[in-house]
Length: 158
Image 1 (cartoon, rainbow, N blue to C red):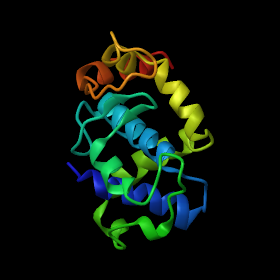
Image 2 (image 1 turned 30 degrees about the horizontal axis):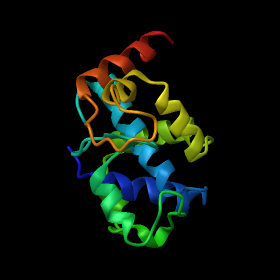
Image 3 (image 1 turned 90 degrees about the vertical axis):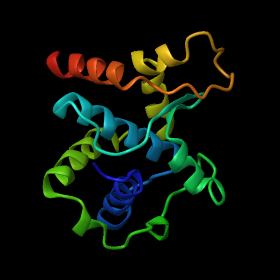
Image 4 (image 1 turned 120 degrees about the vertical axis):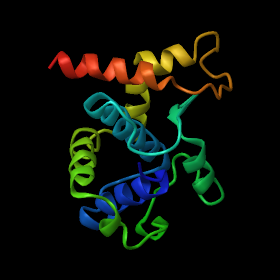
């Protein structure tokens, strides 16, 4: 299992250095969520440490939020200067790179706002937000078993 910061760095590396694609903090949070969700669906285990909470703007990992909150809002652009480990490619296995790259290929064409709306329609986020109004603070963790079963159903429907 990886440290979430390493997976975050790899995503920043791929989007900013390899391809120079737009990536703000909101979008990064959703990409991390989908990387973890699809890993649960394909491999029955988590790729990295860290849970996601059902925030107003969709699933958010608090550690990554805290990493960027000093200098970045949810809509601030993430840059290659935000990479903590400059040797990130040597740390991430080839199989993991392939997994992350496939998630990036699927979800990077969407904006952070589009990914937020997408996550708002999915059972794991809706379940965690049960009893909360649309704009009410919520830090309930998304259930990883529910994430796994939801994304496995999506996988099996293809």
